[in-house]
Image (cartoon, rainbow, N blue to C red; front, side):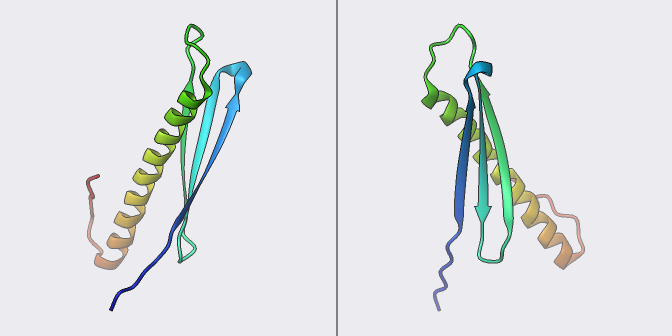
Length: 91
């Protein structure tokens, strides 16, 4: 029997040009109403050329990395709740 699930990640990017900072938030939505959030940021050096896409890429990559870490922690907690044993998952 094949079972298919669909999870969705919404990514929000917020740029603060005056501070040369880009923030990103990656929100995971699952079928069981689990909602995890990952956050990341990027800061442009004043000497660098202003290319918004690079800040977006860095901030989103860091948000997705944070989200992946949070998802691993959630999975470990779920396993511990079932097995009553300490779990350490590697990425």
